[in-house]
Image 1 (cartoon, rainbow, N blue to C red):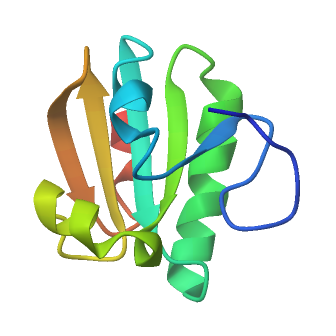
Image 2 (cartoon, one colour):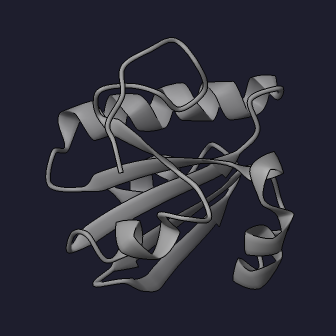
Length: 109
């Protein structure tokens, strides 16, 4: 798991790119974890990514991950993620809240 800075979808110093290989380790890595499942080609997902990056910068107690949904349809199916813009909050590795869309993301922090 690596925090990376850059200009691509989900890549900032305050967010971690999440994928199939690091998903389980990531959700267990902190008491509070939030993952945004989105796609880089969607303007709505890009806006949501910007919102969640800003929230991550302001709330350092929550680890924030960005999952490029088109990279793993299998994990999406396993988690029951049906929308490309889904955000899930975990506590101690267990899902505690799920939101679809942009408008309610701030309630996860």
